[in-house]
Image (cartoon, rainbow, N blue to C red):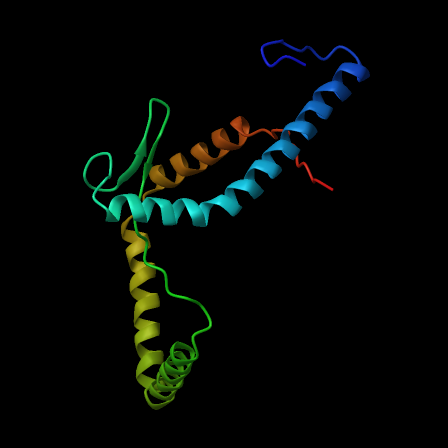
Length: 157
């Protein structure tokens, strides 16, 4: 089916044709995603080589450029998960927090009560009857504009 052809849904057959095309495109997308996942480590190595050799398109991080795209090499901080040293320190920090919480339980409870009281007072100071009425009007109007939009979930087998 040509991509520029406009389809209309006027029968079960035309509906099934559209859904079949969606299925085919999703399979193609899955195949391309898998190929990209396979090529990406090689592409990163290639970009590192080009940028590291000073042959970048802009002299900095653009490893490749043509009329349709540009590939930029950038770095993101990445801390591997499941590092035993980090997990041990995290557990020790949690133990210390629990210990401090137990030692200061009365003070913490008093502060929490004060915070709750102050927050309630703050809410009272920040609201008016007119503001409350406007909030209710806004929520009612928002609900009246809200509708259910159909979406598709395509599960490839």
